[in-house]
Image (cartoon, rainbow, N blue to C red; front, side, top):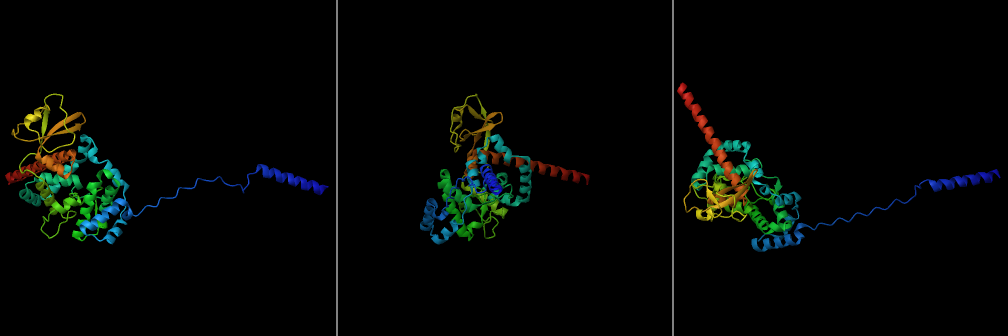
Amino acid sequence: MNNNFQKTKLSLITLLLLLFTPSILAVAPQKTPPKPKKIQQPLSQQPEAKKFIQEMVRKDHFNRAKLIRLFNKVKMNHEVLKKVKHPYEALPWFKYQQRFVNTKRIQDGVIFWNKYAKALARAEKQYGVPASIIVAIIGIESDYGKQTGKFRVIDALSTIAFKYSKRAHYFRSELENFLLLCREAHTDPLTVYGSYAGAIGQPQFMPSSFRNYAVDFSNNGQIDLSNDVVDVIGSIANYFKKHGWKKGRGIALKAKVKKPYLKHFPRQYQQPHLTLSQLAEYNLQPSHPIPSDTSVSIVQLQSQKGKIYWLGLQNLYVITRYNASVHYAMAAYKLSREIEKARNLQIKKHQEKQKALQQKL
């Protein structure tokens, strides 16, 4: 009886334990199975890239197998897409200007000018482009050669060409020019680095500009826009001359607003086309007298206090052929003026110091 009682007691205890103790054998709640990763098709097999490769083979006689191997090593870069959709030039003028027209860039511009004075003087004489503008462009584009870009050019160009339809046509053309450039220079396309937009070297030339306007200004038998500053100087000057730079002419001048109201005008900056009489219809006039047959365009900029107006001449338009943004063109113009002013002051002080020393003797 005792044995039966003990057995019954143990059975009850076991039952209670089973009822109130979580079972180690309980089935864990099922998690939602992760979605299978989408297998990314090799770039060379993606429709747009495949079409591009076919065109390069047909038009430029590239080897199909080599192009396929090359594009299978290309990487799409999301940072490139982010930057191309939100460029610096989209900033309001007063913020954009601060990035490039500042004390440090002016001082470094003077140092650069002094170091390469002979090459700059030769370029100015040969092409008619002021040394101050050449220096300013290099200052804005690469901080005088210190920042030439961290992006692999073929990745940057391919990303925009195949993943950003808004600029696809232009960047496919630049990608074609890049591959042609590398073939002509016997350079591995995977080893060239530049900006997020695929611009190369200290002047940040796009591949088409490199092929069409870069010059061997140092006369050493090769063109090097990454390391040969003399080539950089001559190439920028040649670019501007080929795009219609007018030697000895101005670039821009301030405009006076005769009335608070301005007639509507296109937001996109245009080649100078307004006569002075037509300009009056916009209630604007030059800040100082200019020849009556001068053609101008209106430049509207946003300052911290409101809108300000300038008049762009042919040479300002030429700068927008280098970079289409009028913000860029105005920054280059203003930086060039400040660098020239600072250098002239430096030269004047040096001359006064030398004169004082001579007087002591």
